[in-house]
Length: 479
Image 1: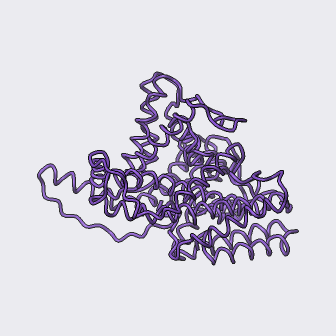
Image 2: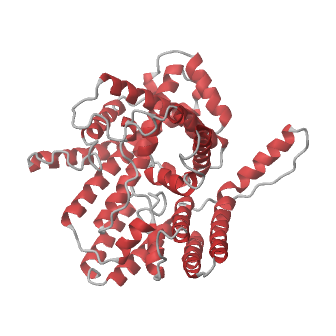
Image 3: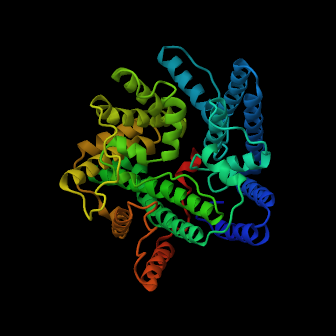
């Protein structure tokens, strides 16, 4: 059941009505209902993996209690190791088993030996990377005495499996989400309206922007050998818009769905393509994952303490691990390493904490320096996305080689030219709303109601006109 599907358009209103109009006076029934609904939502992909989700949830719930109640540090550490080992063991088997087997066999063959191996036809459980990190952050925080464990399994299970964030994030923390689950929730009209608007904008980014970019991007990447350098350049640019529209669109729908149920999820995107450096970009892109690696990997490794060499080492570790988290392919690892390389100058010259505020705050337009920085950062990110999109390293290097050595104008006949005005609309609306939580939160807020609603109807009409017959799956579902 995709967020941009007819099934979800039926599912969400039914949940909303039962949740607020039938169960609104009983918190326990509300939470139980949301948990059952979340498990049903997940079962729409493959009901068999519900057992894995439930096992992971039970494991971390029990581990959290055991860590908290253990009277010695050794026992606490044992339970932490059990939880981490089993969680990462499942994640490693389903996501990385074939990768390690094939990589080891390739190494053996390069050393001159014959390698006989077989891979398994493993189906990757949707969302496993996300709900695994939910559970791990919970046991880490209990071990580090940041939170106390939940004594209500239904509340904890809902924290792990709340359907808006279950399959592609944002990666929530128990410190933020569990208190909202534990306390009674009252219907907030303004919050619900904000949720509907955020869902609308997320659907626009997914259906109109991402899916239409995907059509051109797939064509270009699948036939890159016969395309000109200009076409390949445009293909990389369009993929940048595709993955942003796809993933930030998903996050907007997730946050909007949560608001309809009185639950505020953490912000996952903060206008990353208006960043003035790669360091700023990574403070604004997939914020929940970046902060997770910062808190549970970067800081334990020493963080920014120590000398420059140690900070560089720690930075490369988290980016390489982040790349590997995205998928079992060397392309993702190199993508992570490339971003670490791009961020290296800011670490050496200690400028990585510059540009903490949104660009051109309170101004209509950026100055020339800011504009140049935005374009430069966007091009660096787009270059790195080539590795992310490619199916292999050889394809990525061939694509880049062809892009720089076949300098010809793009073949515009393969593009739907109406896509470019739509991209311009996206940029203008996002720029206008860049100081808000999401782009259309306060757009036309002070205008007449008819103007504001006309804009909403325009977005709906654009979705109906430019919606693809065969909607593309959200990119991050594969992770």
